Image 1: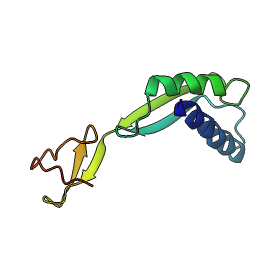
Image 2: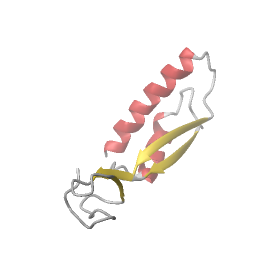
Image 3: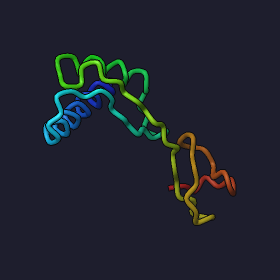
Length: 98
């Protein structure tokens, strides 16, 4: 489960930021998560709750903002939103996406 490793890395960042700002407690952590990240949000919340026990972030709420995926379409030359890898360009239907 790579969500556990992600949660552990998040806690390191949260604790370092809290120390730099002389925070005694962290109440909320905001995370932007890309739609193409292959991270299961519910599993990440579970892991975050587990790794924050005994830390400055114990009991903190993890607020996840899901961002749409994005690709560059070679034929259109535009950046286009993507919901899943392998989807065609929503503008022209091309699969030539980067």
